[in-house]
Amino acid sequence: LRDSLFCMRRLDQVLSSLGYCSRREAVLFVKNGRVKQNGLVLTKADQKVDPHAVTVDDEPLEAPDGLLAMLHKPVGYVCTHDGNEGPTIYELLPDQWLRRNPAVTSVGRLDKDTSGLLLVTDIGPLVHRHTSPKAEIEKTYLAEVDRDLEASLVEIFAKGDLMLRNEEKPCLPAKLEIIAPRTARLTITEGRYHQVRRMFASQGWHVETLHRERFGPYVLGDLAEGEWQMLSLEQVVS
Ligand code: URA
Image (tube, rainbow, N blue to C red):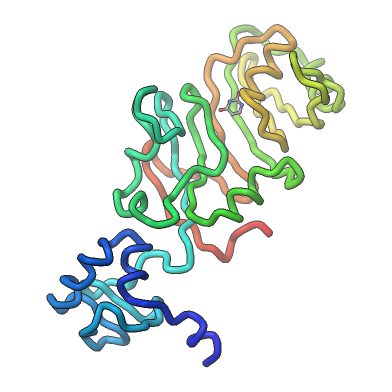
């Protein structure tokens, strides 16, 4: 009971923070009989409700405790909100997510030319936890390079003393698997600017295509390019 009392929030605030409508529009939602709690039509927009028991048009509220999803980012999309640099990943997400408050944002970024797994969330602490260097979350990339790879790279990337230009600290050990003459899988635990491209560049290879397959426990699987998939908060890495 204490838990459910704790969750009680004003209906108009709940609907607006989850991106359904403005607080003013919530009055109309209620007037039109679209909002129910435990199956009973609600009559006042300012009443306290348990978000878990509320439906709009008979659908449960979307991610009332915070939203976490993975997106398969296509090449050519940028991770900023600024549309001047080309299409943004936010164009691939439902408008309602962008109207949430706090708004949905990406967990870290991928370059415009990189495809693959990008987490998106409206849970601030979760962004921090996944992007903090201390978290050392494993990220796995598939890279195609411009000339045949050499086995010596495995050791060079694994040693933990690889210096990138203009940086003071060496890269943490990274795991390289050469899977074809010009294709490798690289797992890193940091997220420095253009890190994978710069690691290869430091040894004289140019990365031609880069794709992130995994972020911590999450894998893209067969999620199609440009598509997103909701993740359950129970799977969240702590
Ligand atoms: N490393 C890169 O170089 N680019 C990315 O987008 C991610 C990691």
